[in-house]
Amino acid sequence: MKIGKQSAPYQAICTSNPETIIVRGHDLVENLVGSISFTEYTWLLVAGSLPNENQRRMLDATLVAIAEHGLVPSVQAARMTLAASPEAVQGAVAAGLLGCGSVILGASETSGAFFRDIREEKEASGSSTEAAAEKLLRRYKEQKKVVPGYGHPLHKGRDPRAERLLAIAREVGLAGIHCEIAKTVEKLIPDIIGKLLVMNVSSAIPCVLLDAGYPLLGLKGVPLLARTAGLIGHLLEEQTRPIGFIMSHAAAAAIEYDGPVPEGFVANEN
Image (cartoon, rainbow, N blue to C red; front, side):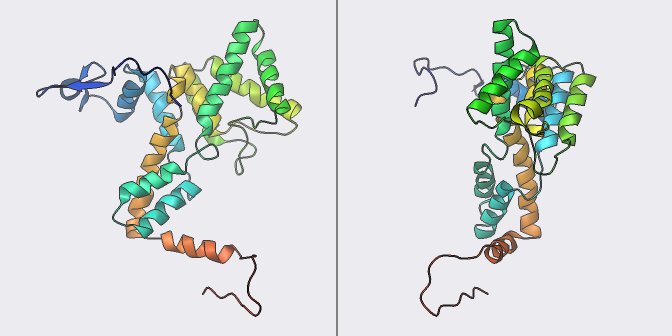
């Protein structure tokens, strides 16, 4: 399925000649290399313009908040891939990123779209933020859809990462309608959904970045970019203190076979 029209053969990110490389209108060597941070460069590449200091700080905070989260499945996939193919660091990084989906790291994009829908409902109807959020939440409940970005298996009472990101947004004067929507949704969830589900980092990232002017379609790339750094750290450690096969053996020990076996067969994989 095509993403959009394919009739315009143009791109506006990078061009070059033998002497100069241009990125988003800037001379890479003269204006960017050594002059801006990688966070600023990321904003430029994605949003098309350089961020101001508050925007840079907000994106930087989200990248730091989500880069590392221990031995989650995507990290295990990366480390075990490197254990099986130690010459292919790039393949191990790719394996980890391929393990990032709707459950791991993907909720930032869906949360951002959810907040956008509430904002558009509020604007179209002229209703309050609470009324618009309640309408969308009740629709999600009727359709038995999970509210993206709320609830966490560990951080049940509060996600400290989410609280810190919202605090930074307030500190730098970027907290706006999307942060208001995110907190309103959290307040309404117990009555409408029937359980306490606090904001997690995957709903905090989109609300603070959308209020900062970051594009909705770029949200999914933020946790992917951040987690790439975390994966590289894990893969360096895997090369010096390998645990890939330990995790593999632990899985074999933890999961029992319950399928049919020939009469008299006794399993012994040790």
